[in-house]
Length: 126
Image 1 (cartoon, rainbow, N blue to C red):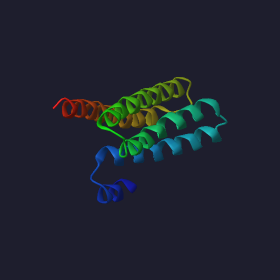
Image 2: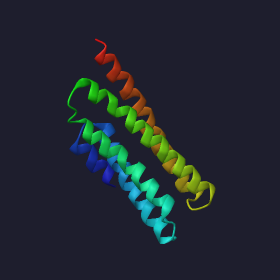
Image 3: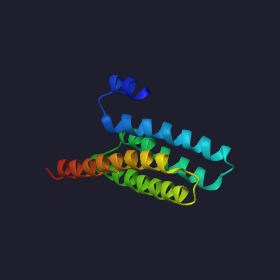
Image 4: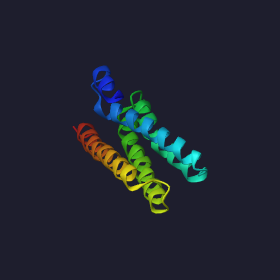
């Protein structure tokens, strides 16, 4: 799929994974709106695609402090995305297979974001 193409384009794994996750979220959004779910699907779309957008924004941070504050915001968006996925699964708009796939992906992103925050803070304190 597109994953292999992304690996060749960039060596920034977090950037690539968040972009691929955004595509996945847009696909989920399309499915949800086809099922006539418009409110929660919009929330999922907003928070799920914000992760990658914020990662891109951080590439051009104004200062080290600005750069370090960005991952905390990504993490909040990732956590909100988890909430919407859990809720949509809980009310049967997302089936278990898709939910587990989504959860695996978002949890990988969260782990990477936490690691990024720790690394950034260490660099700032040096």
